[in-house]
Length: 366
Image (spheres, rainbow, N blue to C red):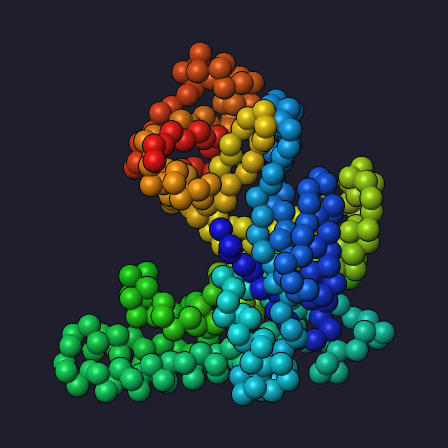
């Protein structure tokens, strides 16, 4: 679906190390492919154990997992909102993404120099927040100026929009991010969508920790957790150094043994990819046949014709019906035919809201 999450953070916090680990799909779950579109953009496979189970039953010629694009965005410095360093490039790259993976250093190491001299994850987070907020304020000021000129017509919609813009400006001036601003989804879509605000994007905080803090965290992660407790954001503890070790292991078995020795059930990369998928409000449905078992990415809440359109626009235009089997039923009965025989095969129309894990066939006519 072309959705992207951008990895952001100050220089030398572990962004590129994490991105390189993400870029090696062998570190995820199975040997699915990875490709690079540009030097800083990776198409990352979404770990999904359901694909493995479907493959066992169907024995297809190939398996195609769902993917999400991850962008390694240039490290930000103070003054980025005014064009300092790679500020304009950094902010432009964030604007093009759908969500933010904010990497924060939460480990001590004298051999890795911090750009500000010492480790302070709350300060680091606030540096980036401030730059994004300043850029958003500049955007809002321009929209307010334009709206004030147009609002002289006393148009109720324009006046309502101007009122909300001024409230949002005051909110940002308190050092808060636009994603926390209280407004109805309808108002946000109507009055803010065209602004492409940076701080309105959903965020995951990734605490880059040392090996012993992966499962329990440390004082730095606790400080960050306290600082973002009102943001309704997910926080992950990941050791980029550990992930880089896992990434170079050739076999799936070796990677699993390594994780077991570390007391981990899955890699940090796998957890991050799954969290990013959730952050982007995505779901998966499957098509399953002898030629191919494939995971298709949709936005949660899509109806059947829209989901069909993800495969091809002709499927949506000529949609007739969807034939649906629930994943659990497919696994239980072991085949499409057996699901039919046991009444677990449903024919759905245009209003059917596709559920995560649905196994689907589409009937269409163009």
